[in-house]
Length: 211
Length: 260
Image (cartoon, rainbow over all chains, first blue to last red; front, side, top):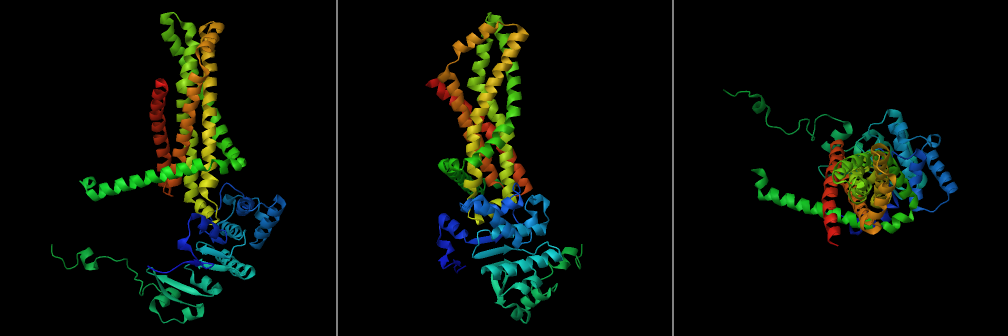
């Protein structure tokens, strides 16, 4: 394995714990299931990074939190607990929390997994809008081809621990690469086999064996 | 014999050493974070309420009954030698020097230690600790340290409550029930219990147990596998390890204090 992970020109692998924590203050991350603090309300979840990293007054924090919640359409849900909101709403709260400190980079871990069609298109719209409104960089890890292609500028296919193909969504759709074609088209069999590696069928079922 | 295989022995020794190293590092980090933790007193007070106040009921009730039993058993032995009035002294010394710290620590491990382990373990399973790290908030500083210091403060206080309630329980059995003279019950106790030699010993013990039990609970929670089985195994390990550590340390501390 070789290469570097550069963030703002700094190689992340060279940083110590303190440097990493400093770099993370400019990043936001959306976990697959939101990872909200279950003992805090929606409002307090979004306020958490502000309280930890700033000395803003309570009135200022309230305004900022409500602005972030408004951006994800959940200003009215501020007093609910994470156990009282749906999966799609939890992810939007987590998104509001991720943008609380106005990061330069947001990483999304499977933002579309397990969402109904409405929540899914809400999530995709939000990612796209936040990206252009806040002028940030978004890295989306997803295997939902249609939603991702709608919002992505650059697509990278990872397979077997390597980059299999990359380009714009249009280039990917036009790709002749069999692996990309199978993935984009959602074909059951192709370079990625339908069958998990196994001994030959004949051996397992004893076909042709004389006992 | 699989476990005699040198590779397996080497692996278990190495991973054991790594565990000890991780635990030691976490312990020193928690101790070093004392200043930062008390700089945010609000977090410690919240945890003191959860750890301390919520343990009060079980500590009070247990203290009362241990006091009852001590007075009954003490009277049974002492009246053979015609010194039944000394039952107050016996109850107080047993509680303050030994039973207060030890029984409180065992109950504390079961009541507060398990909930700490399960809470931290489930936070880990829900990716809450990872989310905190991604927000550039150190979970050891924000989550573990306030709980650690709250446990260290709460444990001696709970042990003191246990001993005090136990002495009242002993009085209830000895004076109104058995009919021992109240004056000699209290005066023997007052004359025989030394503030530094006896009460001080107990306080030192309970503080050491506070460090031990709270640390084991946090270490198990922080290091557990983030699955339902992992959290349940870690909770069990907290009770087993904390109880054994308390009993073993109690012997060591008692022996050391006798020799001084």
